[in-house]
Image 1 (cartoon, rainbow, N blue to C red):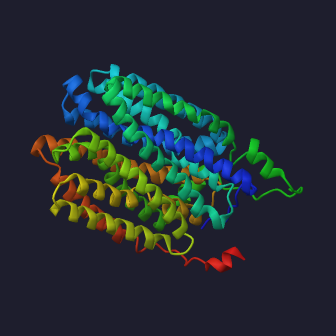
Image 2: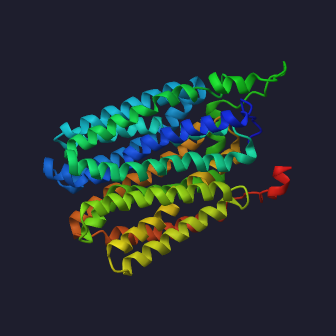
Image 3: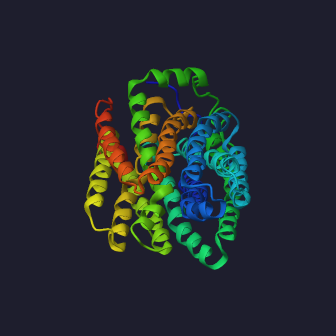
Length: 425
């Protein structure tokens, strides 16, 4: 385990909540935009005539690119500060989303959805946002803090999915997509609040925290980026964590991209698709905050195993249940409880293994594994449906992978958390 220490001191309580609001709000807008794109899959297919498999390829590439940008963005944020990275990310999400309706070829959609919008969302994604908050939060409160930031992404999905569906009915799908893209620009002020870096200490709000009461002593030098990455890749627990997160990416991307198609295949109208995505986001808020609370009380690897096992069971029950509107919403709610609740314990384990000095980079690499899984989840959904007229085989694959992920976390070596009373003392 790395002996590096954090680069900056924790903030006072009011500033902590301001930082959390900025990070959660940014994640709400970027994730909310990405998670509503599945609603536009069918209109894009009708408009371009490219076929579901070709359009799914653009969405799948977006999953992969979102993951690939995160370790790179994390390394830049660790070195130069999160603010510049978040600013560029928000602008790219807006640009890619606004340009998407004008694209009529597969590669045009790959550029707009898969490179610009997804890459921007990766730059303003959890790797940068989690590290920007965790280096400022006391260690015993980081689980709850990551749960709150993670819940921000869920709230964005809950708020923006029905909004996008309403705009599609009132304005048409092209204008609706462009309005959703422009809403991302509301997060630009957060880039200033979160502009601190690990290597130079923090600036702005975090700079006040880093220097207040500090004496002449300097913090021990954190390991270099190459050394930190090498140490992580040699760590067996880190490799198992990345393997499990691959499965999470498969599951999440399939739902985010194809849940509206699943709803349509059940014979339900578009409004049910919007509300199913909203339920996914609403209950993910509950799941994220509950998981943030739980990581300080139980082993994080055990919590991850429980989440993956619950996913497998829920999908199995859904396959045999009648496909009514109520069942779809109930299924979406259960999936929401487990949707991104894997993020707080995964980020927490990375921080526990290696500290927070290079957290954006190391968690970004785990997120890349997540998005490799996301590529296959988004792409296979379209391919399987085109080939069979059903999503059943993707669900079967998802069940097998979820069971495997539940098992793969068990060998991770993690010390039992200290009792809550001892932490609070």
